Each structure stands twice: as structure tokens, then as C-alpha cells.
Image (cartoon, rainbow, N blue to C red):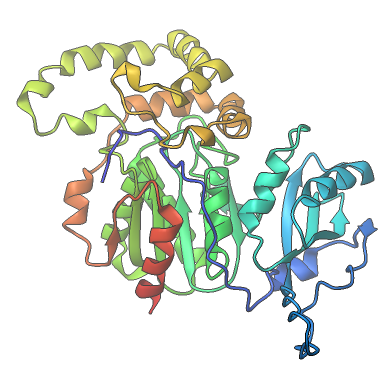
Length: 393
């Protein structure tokens, strides 16, 4: 297991494990989905053909692959011409056709051969030059302690809850959610202060706050114990929830687990490192000066700086945040940049770097009895799917 500090090293290009025994629609989606503005007929030949015996002297016909329906949310979907562009991207994959387009909701209902993964459809949209982004889920809002919290949900089955890391949001898990939704009900939540969740001023941003948020989220949305999957700080939060609410968590998966919310968490044991505390006290004092914190945050959140940090080369002597350099592209940078410009984002930044680091993961592991899967950055889905099958029995 590799631990690269607190960077969200969620980098693998995932391949789905296909389970196509059910449609990908939720009952609530059928009720809430508005009348589509654009509809296309299902093309002939996508259904599985009945088995026929080949005539003597001829080669047997190749069996046709059954089709299934998938719903995607596509940013930038504003008119029929946009739908045509997406269909042109899908034409490069056999057996993929857009059946319906809800332009107001920016949703597509797609018919795809069962050997085409949701991740492949998302990647086809990403590679378009128009900057669209496709995700398999529909984002919704939840009120928690008077604040709006953003979350996403997709799939049916045993519940799996995804918790992002510092600077991340639900879209960090877009590909993993697509893969896991083939057999599980996947929920991803934006921690308060991150993503599209509110960023209230005066809030104490620390692991204790987020542990309570995730615990309440599980209580409100999961009718049975869930498996928690955390990345970076999200791993620490997942362990914290499992330790405090053992009856709500069936298993925990850690992806690049952070040692604490900030570097203070690393100075609890080593007396030599603890000698550096005066230096960090100065840093904390600087960050608590509003004007100085705003100036530093402005430098930190720029697209160029985020791209530079994500593409750290091995020549720096530091491990790159993403093991797969191909995972660092404009879509990922947009996912990280946009929420950093929301009002209140600078207060979250200061709170994370100056606040309570929370309990060490080592101490939390000792308190939990549920199954634990450590980081497998190069084989996340391949390692996670079989393990989920074992956990849920």
C-alpha cells in the first residue's frame, strides 16, 4: 500500500464488471423525468436475436449482443445539434444509440450493447472537443443542519457510500460510481464546504464535523449497513464513522488514506518532528490573517497551479498525486477549480490547514471490527467489486 500524503490519488481508468440483469433507472427517476423534448426510435437489430441453426455448408451466424438502457447527465447539452454531436461520438462504438434527450434536464437515455461500459460512454463524451462532461448520476440536494448538501445517487442494490478528499467532490468518483452502479446502489456526498455543498462562514471545518455529516447521511439514505469508500481525508472520515457508528457500516475501503486533516496529525508521535511546531504556528498565524489567507488561496486555486500540482514529476523527489498521468486532463482540473471560486471557499481552506487534524487512522482502525480494504490505486474497481461481493454476502 502506498500513502502519498493528502493528495487525492484517485487515478485509475476503470473497467466495469458487467451485470445487466436490471435497468439503470430508479423508480423516482421515472416519476420525475419530464417529457423529453427529443425522442428517437430504438434502432432495429439491437435486441438479442433468436438462436438459428446455420445452413449446411455455411458458417454459423455471430450472436447479437443484447442491449440495455443507460441514463447520463451531460453538461452543455442545450439543443438538438448538441445531441447530434454526442451521437457522432457514440457512433465510433458499435451498438450505441441515443433514444431520448431531455434538453431541460440535460439528460440522455442511451441504448448500448451490454459489452459497452458506462465508463466508455463517459470517456467518449469527454474526448469531444466541445468540453461536455457525462456522468451516470443525477445530483440532488439534502438539508443538513440548515445547510444545503449536494449528493449523487445511481444504481440499485446494497448501499455503497463514497467520501471524497480535500478539494474533491462527488465528480471525483464519476468513473468508479459508473462501475459500481452495475450491481450496487452508489451514493456520493459533497462534504460541507466542498463541491456544490454550501460553504458557510463561522463553521468549524474538521473531521468531527464531517464524521457527523456522513453518519447522518447514512442514517437518512441507507436502510441497511453500507460500505464506505473514502479517498484521502475521506478515508479518515470513513474510518471515523465506522468507529463511532459501527452498526451503520458493513465495511470500509481506503483509497490513499491521509494521516490527518492537516500536517498536525503527523506530529503527534515523533519528538523530532514535533520540534517543527513553532514554524507551523507561524504559518497558522499567517493564515488567520484574512487578507494574507485570501492572497495565498488565490494563488493556490488557479488553474495553472492546480495543473502544476497534479502533474508533479518524479524529478521533484515527490510521488505524483496521480499514478496515471492520463487521468490529469481539463475535465479533472475543472472539477477541482470551479468549487474553489464559491463564496466561503477561502474559509474552508483556512479551516482545513489550521484546524484540529482529527484522530489518527491507526487509532481508528483499532476501534473497528468490520472488513477493511486498503488502497489499490492501480486496480480500484477490480479489487473493490469482488470485495463488495464478499462483504454483502
